[in-house]
Length: 468
Image 1 (cartoon, rainbow, N blue to C red):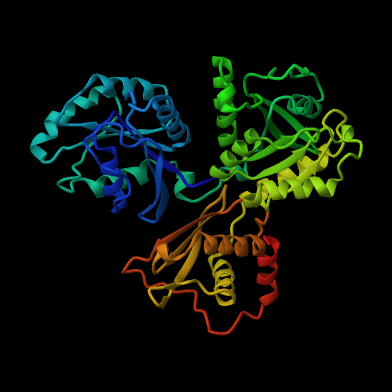
Image 2: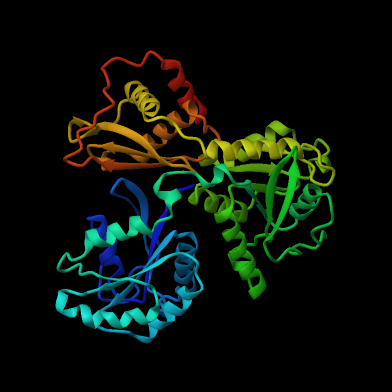
């Protein structure tokens, strides 16, 4: 599975962003006494005691935003809670228990995710008894910290790694033993429910030509060639401006939640309609969450040759240029044509997302990529990558340790991703790439490039041509 995420939750002004920066040892989040400065989620890759995880900062829970963004902030917080393997519930020892603290505690009471209560601003041991009142929230052992006095950082990090599920700490993939969950998403009336009925072999959904019939996400289990799948049918999405009723609002949120918990996403298109802004927003959300997906052009029997298959392929690739790795399928959900091949391909993507590569092989690939196309200069010196390692799956997550991460442009990062995707067993799924500065005491240097081009020059020439 993906890297475990640690969400920092709490009311405004308890020091969440300060703790985020303190644990990361970087000034990443804005720290200000004004409530509501943090709005979007911010994440940072952490490693402690050999365990990798993502630290996620969130906005203050319960704030009335001055720019009327309260709902959007709350959505970001809920997304962080839903995705977290562990939650840091931050409180303020100096201020004591506030009504909003109790509101946060009530909201976390029904969450199955482990929670650590962090009593921040406990600047000395003499304040520890004052922090004991937070035990009433019933979150087990309380940990007292102080960003100002640098108190309790290692203790908190030790507790985080101890509380993470063992499978996450060992880097195992839960998806290896589970049946793949496939989310079916798309605009209204593109045939998603008809497709589900074909999979299940029964009228499990209400199938109608009236757009918006499916208003909740529904899971349907089915078997194909002895393999069990879970299909997640979702409501048809609409433009944000068109969401007027509460039922549409919650339907959109359930669709997004279905994407987050899916292993593979099938994005449905109707060949009789042009790609819309809703489709683009949907694909942006899928890319943001690094989900393997397949573009599915449904109702192909109704196309009746009005547009050749090749033209639709070019149309999709030109529209979604950053998703050039995504496979495209043409099916007829009503009759089941090409549905079996589509599911087999979804199973293949599931395996690709769970694939792992040996560090030695990964470094050989990176070395060849660097030799064929050297990284840009950094203040008249050649930028350098010392070594790379895969730290997680679903999506395949690679960390490259280098001299200066900022010297690698977004274009060069895309080049590295293409090189890895084309030379690993994950050519059709997204890869998550982190560039991190190598620690001073880390002397590993497994990538030693020469001035000559790689002998395997053709491989990387092909990589370049694919996106041109």
